[in-house]
Length: 403
Image (cartoon, rainbow, N blue to C red; front, side, top):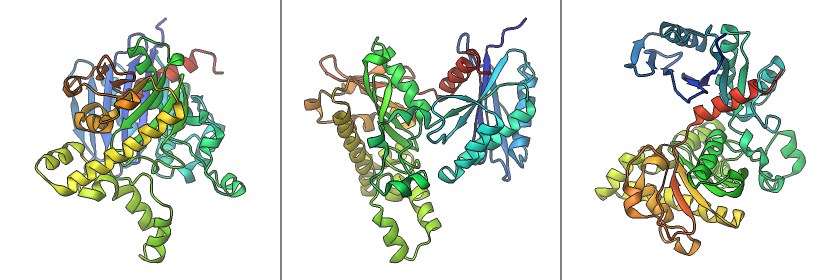
């Protein structure tokens, strides 16, 4: 009998589906792909089988059901169909799990109902995640569907750090607290950093800096998250590609009362027209550093604001942890922008933090230490792999007797 060792990881967004088929015996990816522009004109599917050339097809995908049916056909064309006996589970990224979901969870009707109840605190993400789960359940009703939550890793943040200092009854009635996001990335990278240093995660205190278009920081003490920068929503914290990050709440009232902006307009401003984009018109760090090198003042302002906020969180998390063993840069900007890493750590030798310029300038897809040997704190670049983390959590769950 064929052993079921593969997990299909689905990340359903509002107008896209990313997927990876991962074999848990050796970490191979027999297939990866992306469907984009779901519900829009000019839908596009790109499917890549292992060691094969990408196959691209353009067609309308009116909804997620149509998109996932197309994914199933592409997988079947490579002998990797959803009816394969090698498929152990389908793992789903779910952005918001609230306080209830602290670990990967096999999806039942009750679980889906609870994820729906969380839509008001994740209106941009949970609806698409739910749709992906529902369609996958319909395609393979006999297969375990496992929800892996972005918020789960952060549920260990102490109550005094997770609470906002507002009226408790009001906060509890509306589920207002710090949840944190990018949890699968922070969990994966904190463990991978410990491995890079040849240590057990339980022995290492790590500050993880997940710097992509969305950006977040976490303080991880001995493998346990004790603080994170994102809050009730992914808007709080660092300066991001299009999000403001930390802002005086009074700005919202001012823009509404004095500026005449509606709540929806302010929401759009802070989430989609702020951050790097709002400061200089670009949210691509490569373009910003190019412009800065040419003397562009707006680009330089955006870069400095981005790095300043990053350094504030670095210092704060050094205080939260007391002892820092490593700082790990990850995600698109963290892994590729040497200028950001250099600027974020400059002048911090009194904290035991330094970066070797030569090591920092090396471009590589491998996890690596970029701090000099004398540095008390290891500074590392650690590529994230959220899909592998989701697959590992799903596979472990279905092999430990979830029923």
